Image (cartoon, rainbow, N blue to C red):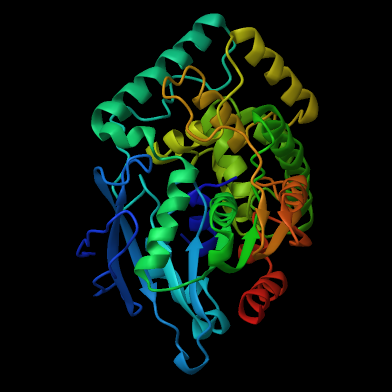
Length: 434
């Protein structure tokens, strides 16, 4: 759905001086050269708690690739690759020339940033890892369920102890307010936005809060914040089952598949006795470019590992709180997922969000709610075969954005920007021409 692992699959895979800001003003970052592609790095400071703008500060890390054709520069384009937990700094700084076509690099200053809690910004720290291979996300007994809940609470306690008060303020609304500090620090009256996956929710939230400060936005791989956790799980489950059948068909027809001529479904079922297998397979299904690696892993029975990033866990529990509060409730949802997807059985990212937040003691700062937007020019892109952000989510998000355009694409994979050059070109045209 939103992980930085997806961006890493699609791509193959600093030092900055901090400037202090007041609650209503922002000093320009002091840019210093960084990376191997001609980028600059800097940072701004923002309030730790936006309810107390004169209080403690945290750091937001930035990187910039200046427009290659200054005479035809449109402005600043902020980029968020998803997650939550994806690093815009890393991708713009280290992979900018691979990730962004020349037509985009010519016209915009491309700015990547690490949202609060993430990467080179003031980070969330969790000494207890959010995932434990000895604790199943699909408990079969009350004792296993209780162990899952106890682990989640131990994770949260470790996060609070190591992170401090920031732990209560890494929700998407707070991150969106930080974006406006970035805009002001860059000296721009308006920004353009390219958001993938979770980056669609962050961008829509910013546009909802500050509609007059968005010039144009592309939201690709849309996240609908009205879904509720049950539908989020079931939509992903249904689409993942569809994509798995397409993966099997590819293996049957393409001799380059390591499992060509073999029973792929039977092999998957044989191996899928641990969460690592199911979730790793799901991650690979999100990009056809990763299908050869999945086939190799199925053949060898190795290469399965699906850890969860600490920032990802904390942010998702703020934004997508679970409605599961008992073992019978979770049993019923497991059965529902198995009926919808008898092969993949609910091994999807939204399931990890759902069960990872059971018993989570930190109150959600941004629970399920609509994201109404009125004013900016927004293109919502949604794929018919996207297992991470299914097609209906894009339709629903577009309905919340007055005057938005909806661009469906019929390919397979997570986000057209990363998976389909023709649709990517339409997105770039929308950003440059509006």
